[in-house]
Length: 483
Image 1: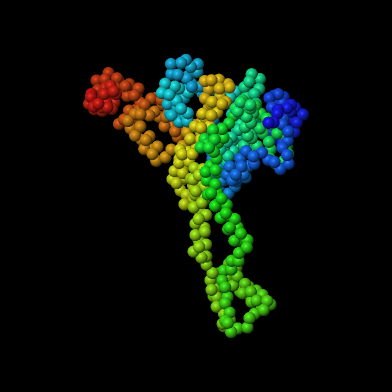
Image 2: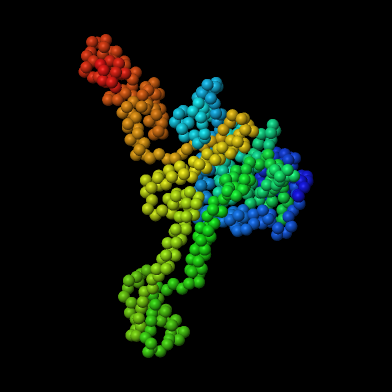
């Protein structure tokens, strides 16, 4: 078994190889909590000993398959996750005291929070300067939040596992977050059989290997039917589809590289003298000069007596070859849950089809992923700052604009919305007047306060309540028809 040893002498080299740009303040802490082990023998990459067999079980090969339609699908998911910033909040009971009630989420925002909540719980957002929120928005020195989450999802989708290094700072709280390359990382067990370290070893050479304490690493796995400690990659589930897709691409590339694709063929009469090489070159040159190029398209073709011209077309088997490529493409996109429209391969895109594809992408792919990320990061990271903290994402599924307009019209007709709610949905500034936050009654769309004022004014003047039921008497009687 590998024995830990001091690593201060190689720390600078390791940080250049693996964590280029790591802040100097982390290096002493890394040296105190990590250990160096001997370099592997030449050509003995550890991935072959831990994940033997076909490429779909080899993390190094899984990462190398980040190309073709796998690249399209994974990059779309990673970019979409990176576009949505995480939220950090306290989860409070409705009976608990809240210092700043302005930070409580309303019912609409609470309904869009992708996190499990009980009926009596409410969400209180943390202040912008909270250390956990600042850590998620700026995880380390060279990385921004977008790149950090993009890299995290990249390894998670390709290998089924993602490892985050959270080196502790003063007070034991993580002061940075780094994505460890999954194909460089594997768990190391102690004498009891439990995971005690994570071994980090770059594969691109005989670099020094490092042991990082288990408590400094956050593991995010996709559940596996095979292992309780390692994740299961979509590539392992769809390896045959991906192999077929790559075989089709290789075959098409070889066909174009090795094949001959003339548009027409000229057949000479059997009784004619066989042209030699010079004659063929002369005939080809004259033929191309007279009939080649776009300016000679559909020009009548004149051939000497005894010669025949035939047009060459794709055979049915070649056409089926193209169709099979499209079928495999759709299978790979479905493997990762990316609609064809989101992958930008649908030729008949309309605004409605794009909106429907985005809604499906968020509902069926991104939102379950957000729920998974939020729960794991809450359990493994948020507790190090406060046990009451929770990390979550917001449901950004686009709404159907036509349905929204119908809902707004119905709500306004029955006094179920305020003007400021409507203006907020439109991206407009709210009305400063108090009636902007009051529901409006139906029929003549007046604020309740104004309807009451008019009713009292008409009553003081001796007006008849039967002239206009919407402006006379108590507005509470309008819906029931009482005067």
